[in-house]
Length: 407
Image (tube, rainbow, N blue to C red):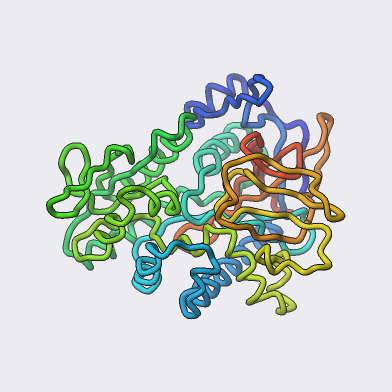
C-alpha cells in the first residue's frame, strides 16, 4: 500500500465527478472556506495480493459480526447494547427471518502491514457509495492509473437486489415495487444521490423503483399500513434513514407493528442492523474473539465505558450511535487531547484502544486514511478511502481513489 502524490489530473474533473453524481463535492469548512471533498491527482495503490488478503479479512469480519449478533440475541443483551425495548421483537424476528439486506461498510485501520483493525461497522445507512462505486471507477478508466481497482460494487448490488427481491416475491406471491426513501434533513444532496444511484441498481435488477421522501410517507390510520403520496402501498422500502431515528419517531411503533404482520412493509436495511450499527458491537466482538490468537488480530480491544480497565491511559471514547466522528474523544495519558463536538452521547459510550491512523505524509501535510471496505449481500465488494488531516475522520475528510497493480 502506498500513496502516490502526483497522478494524472483530468481536464474539467470537477464537472466530471458532478456528472457521476458527486454533486456534494464542495465542502464548506467552519472557517467559511470551500474546498473539494474529492482529491484529484493523488491516489492509493495496492498490490493484487494485498487486495486478496483484505477480501479474506473482510469476509472473516462479517462472519464474526454474524456470531456477535447470534450472541446478543441468544443471551438477551439488548439492554447492554443500548437498543430500545420497542425494537427488540422486530430485531429478533428479522434476525431469524432474514429479510432483504443489501449492503454495509467496514471502516478499517490499515497501513499495508498485517491484518487491518476494525474501527466500526456502518451497517444500516452507509454513504460514500457514489464516489466508491461510480466516481473512482470513472477516474480509473479515464486516467489509466493502475491496472485495476477493487470495485465490484455495481455488479454485486444489482445481483443482491435480484436475489433478495426474487426471494421476497416467491415468498409473498407479489411482485414488489421498491420505494427508495431519503430525508430532507440532509441538505448536501448526498443522501438523494445515494438513493438515485441505488434506484438504478434496482431497475437493472429488473424491478420498479420509485423515489420518495421519508417525510412524505403516510400512515393510514384505518388499516395501519404505509403509503406514498400517490396512494400506493409500500411493499419494499430502501430507507436512507437510520433505525435509531426511525424507532424514536412518532410513527416508529406503527412501522414495527406493520412490518411484523403479513402484507406489511419490508424495510431495507432490516431492523436487525441495529445490532451492528451501534458501537456496542465493538466490545461484544472483543468479548467473543479477543482471546483468539488469529481473529483478535482484526480487532482493537474495546469495552463498554463502565467496564474499561483501570490501567487504560490511551484510548478512544465513542458514543454508541455517533456519526461522522461527532462526540469522539481521543485520550492520551489519561487526558482528552482531541475531540469533536456533536449531539450524541446520552445513549452511552464505548472505549476502544487507541491505534493512531497511519500517516502517508505528503507535500501538503499529513494524510490519515481510513479504508471503507464494502460488503454487498454479505460478501466483500469494493473499497473507498477517506483521508483526513487529523486522527478523527469527520465530515471534512477527503475521498481519494485507489488502484490495484499486479505486483
